[in-house]
Amino acid sequence: KAGVTQTPRYLIKTRGQQVTLSCSPISGHRSVSWYQQTPGQGLQFLFEYFSETQRNKGNFPGRFSGRQFSNSRSEMNVSTLELGDSALYLCASSLWQGRNEQYFGPGTRLTVT
Amino acid sequence: TQLLEQSPQFLSIQEGENLTVYCNSSSVFSSLQWYRQEPGEGPVLLVTVVTGGEVKKLKRLTFQFGDARKDSSLHITAAQPGDTGLYLCAERGSNYKLTFGKGTLLTVNP
Image 1 (cartoon, chains in turn red, yellow):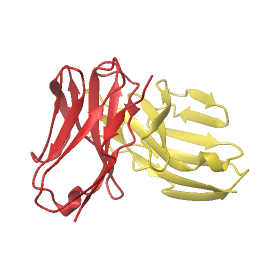
Image 2 (cartoon, each protein chain N blue to C red):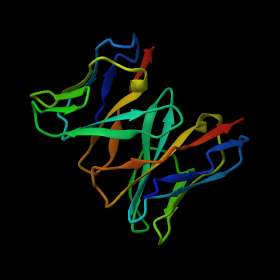
Image 3 (cartoon, rainbow over the protein chains, first blue to last red):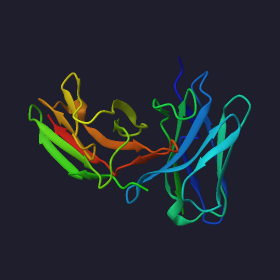
């Protein structure tokens, strides 16, 4: 069974631009969560989607948003990029909301210049 | 929001040595997970501990959950270069959100 895939793997953007990252969960998984990982703050929860609805949200500004499609694929968008948004963005899928077993993708490395 | 403290932050050892890393909180964990993240990859779940005093073994890795469920440790016996990575502990709160510690970056030198 294929794992969680994230595209693109690397991205360079300029401050003020917006960016969209994509995540394809493991086949049959219905829940997708997004995390931001930085050296200073570590891994921080952004939001979780289940059945096309946002079920949980972390403490990030409204510039960070996401959505989930009927096939469980998910996208996250960051508008008006800031230098501090440079990070590894990780997506994780699980079979159902709240299930312990989350499977992470390799991440998208975003660099904002 | 529960804060998870991991120590040490960095650890560099020689192949064959033993090591222990720690995860602590001032609050009681509902359950605790340990992950390993290798460079260029996402974290991979190693184990979930739920019961106070629980000990789980995964080959050369031994995971302990404190009796009071406020701390956990990961012990690696005879470390190998393949054990190199970032070791993260995480707790899933009542709202299913995972809260991670900042991790211990382990380097095992051949």
